[in-house]
Image (tube, rainbow, N blue to C red):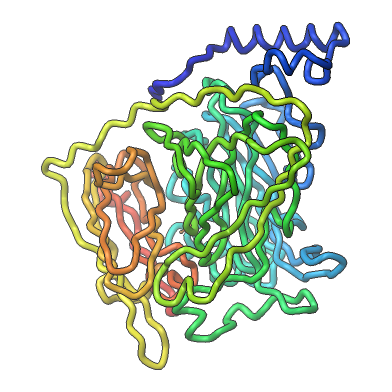
Length: 505
Ligand code: C2O
Ligand code: CU
């Protein structure tokens, strides 16, 4: 993958490491050497993050059962477990391996991942690897790419990581209920050629939970039709499964945030007083250019990749806030900002932040000449129930769209409804056709209320039946979901992918 940045080479990075080791060996801790930092601020890379800086945000990892450095083999069990969300109160939640979030899958481009999955939940489930370009048969869409995994049953997921970036995994069966109870985990795919000039990685999986005062989960259908219509936002905001954790930082010492929105319905608009962020990209890693931004906006299913440069004086405490974002009818009415994450500046020495390159990656616009064009109209029908659909048809009555390997299609996604919808396509990255945006590859894009967005997608490989849907999971389950058959024109007819069997809602 051609990338235009890379001011620093492996060689200089190793040189820097060697210098750092020498300093340690000589017993000279430059960050604490009195006098030295006042005259000459330290380069950011010469200092480490504060001791235990991200301890409260640490994500569990799963044991790698395979000694091959290019294979990550792990066991994931979905099971009911007691977790502590509110201080001193037990919440009976649905978990991967007993915790919220599930284990972080951290690997590098080209690695093979093997997941021995066991369903110990009282209901069927599947795992979808959101954003990963996996083969169709491990995509985790129940009744489409695999049968639902019944309670007590096991399933082996195996795939190769083809793209650097931030991804996540979650159930695709009764998804609003299952994600809402705690089933989600982060995936970080690193590129060994990626210089770490941007600073240390911090994966932040943002979620929310609906709990009563005893710490019990609200029922999955809380709010009834209104819950379906608005999408269910839990009142308890979590960062890596914690309520208002604290991050320790050093003034000027950068870190790279990898943010995942794993909520059912909540839109995030993140703000930090006194600070701006350098957005590097999102769903599929780096965008073409970095962008200096004030609001970090992440809609359900999306990811954001941004450099945070702490700029507060040592001894101060700041707070990252969720700010209400317009996502349709009444969504910001009478709502205040909420605190999510405390940021404590602990270090006594300012450091000079690293410059962030502007050009990050070469992303060529897809050639749209001769591309098949189609329109997907997001629709809501309110009768005695709320039925959402695409082109007026809910998921359980839909006919699959058709595409051929090698073909480019242009989808106009029209949203005439009173709500915004984050549109997600499985299996392929797309480009938003809009010259005012920084070019980047995405798998989820917000379609604001009463507007439309056009995306271009090239079906590069991997025939099969793929899902697309609104990532407000209550909307998806209410019918705003469809399928797409990607066929290999050279495959014998017998190898054609089967048509999905849709279960009645
Ligand atoms: Cu993240 Cu079909 O979903
Ligand atoms: Cu929606």
